[in-house]
Amino acid sequence: MTQRKTLHIDALSGYEPEIGRWLCALEQVRERTLHLISDLDQRTLDWRGEAGKENSISSLLYHVALVEVSWLFYDILLQDFPPEIADNFPYPMATNNAVTHIEGLTLEDHLTKLQSSRSTFQKHFKNMTLKDWRSFRSPPEDDYRVTPEWAVFHLIEHEAGHAAQISSLSKRVKRQLLSEEKS
Image (tube, rainbow, N blue to C red; front, side, top):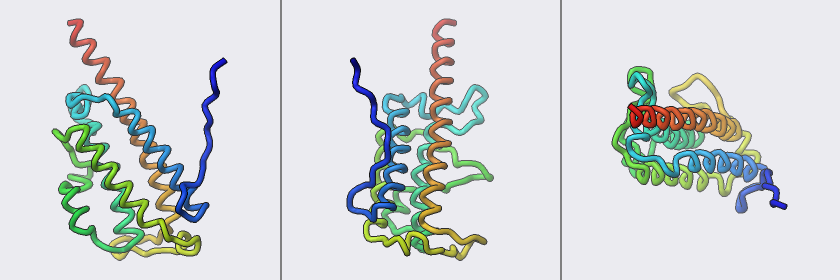
């Protein structure tokens, strides 16, 4: 008899328990993303769909990591990126109202960016209280107020959506490559 997989949310240790549970959910979404990209080659990372006009997996991975640190610094901490973060993300989030096209970054480059953004993000929640977790911030450049709790909810939703795109792109490029081989 095979052992059943256990599906649950545990609080990450070292955090206020409720905050730790949300961060665990965020981590589970990241694990799915990492699983989806674990064996992708450069051609698959840079593929932009049959017509060459879609977001590539490379663009989506860069975007996911950049959005994570953007929410942290601009919306939660209300500050600009420190130099090490700015250096790690030299391309803008969007170009011409679309996710910036990223090409040529290796899988290792993306894994490093994803790890860096996540460790930076988690570090800032270590000593957060529930009161601070639910306190509103008002980013000066935007017309909304946001709590860290909502920002983490949004990041879970955001990465899950892009993981679905990555899964679809990966399957489609594999079908196209098989079709090209048969031709």
